[in-house]
Length: 446
Length: 189
Ligand SMILES: [Zn+2]
Ligand SMILES: [Zn+2]
Image (cartoon, rainbow over all chains, first blue to last red; front, side, top):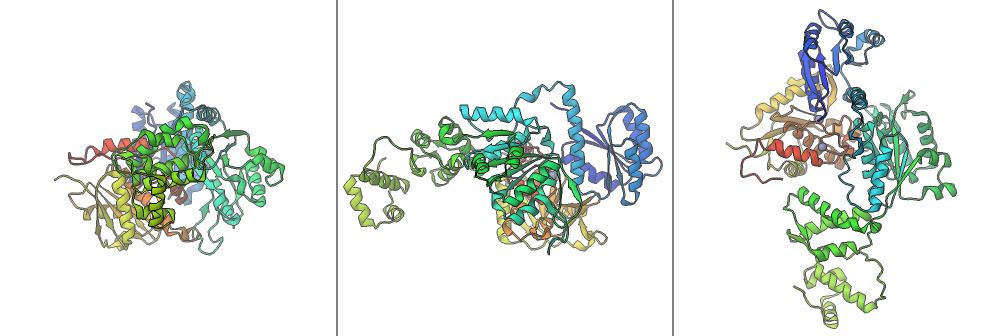
């Protein structure tokens, strides 16, 4: 197991030590505290720490002096100074002396997290380099990408090969194929995993909303904006931004996006300060971007900037062999989330699933299973618990009567031969339904 | 006495629907039944005029004092702006493995960020803060899974990225951690 990163907090104020202690403990760090620089030096005699967070102003020895002493100890922790707003000048001096960074009290939680994540990323990068990158060949956090089909294996191996780099990725696939899951897997397996993965569903937002969403806005930019709001690009600093439905953005946003991708800087709405952000961009679309470039609805320069790597997710109908595994995965998932005992699925129902067309892909399958667990008997998912769906084209052409018979039989079975409900679903009266049952000689099967 | 419920302590008015939906999610994720209690803490004592915010550590202590002996965990629900001495704000607070947690929906409202009010989103965010803080109180630390409820969130948009569930790793850890509070009549989740 990987060693926990250790943090030493040096501050004379107890409430500060306690607050920080609890904050970092939640993050899973090993945390110790010292109430003075002198105590910290004593602790350093017997222990090593990865990160030291020290207040600049302390009675006795101050933070700057502590930093100088530590440097002579041939130890190399990341040293971060904490300062009150008034003593920023001293903090800048600490930076000149080689401190890693400084934070101003009270900290914005986001700034503090970011600072520590940066430090953590640096430490683990160092230790990964030292320990011969041995475990990098296995993907983590891909538990939702289920299956063993060639199509899925190809996607997984593409995720693996692209995760370590900074390259922009476009994920193409029909809706419901799991484009966001792929983006998540790339992020979780990249060196950026310590930082946020920020998703933006471009298709759901108007142009002006998308602008404020992506770039953020300053306090007072419009009525009601009581606080500054970070944009998604800013939140993604150090991490990854996932732009879903990229094909839907307007011509104006395409230009703005291109500019941000080139400069990695932007300005908040209503602001004038240039903000820099180090993010990786992953896009997704269910459209053919290349043909959109050809017919002039998507900028070519933007397309090439985004499309360094293209991952194509096959539709579910092209990976039918994954359906049983996926079905069982969703059964487990929903039984757990509905706090029910685990149900099974009867072979006929499973077979039916492999015969469906699934225009809504994995998501449609997932919805089907969730529904089947809700309507089912709580023990086994039966054929009747599944919707009819659009089956793949049968080679034999069926007559209208055949289709009607099949449809009525399915509806009857779905409603457990409750005539009123079946008639209602078929939008006919009960007498008509009885006549059809007679005509087609339909019987309740046990 | 065996401890087998989680207690929601509402400080300030919360809709019945909201409380019921929270109870439902807590029960689903932690496997304990949930009961409610209303409580009027004298909040002025925790107010910091300079910061115009309320001290979360003090409120956490006060909440612990009004909890009941037979609950496994209690969480106080608030509507005020919370801070701890070193941070400009927090959404909620819990001690790792502690008995009590608190959460506030003050900073979760869209209106604060110049956006249209969205009751649904607000409820969703609050639910996530509550589940997250309770997760800490059961001893769970932050998780790197981008959509796990135990992912650390410092911005409302961070909350929106998460789901209201534990990832499989955290769910498993929770099950282990829960063991110490359980008695044999508990059904595994
Ligand atoms: Zn937390
Ligand atoms: Zn987790």
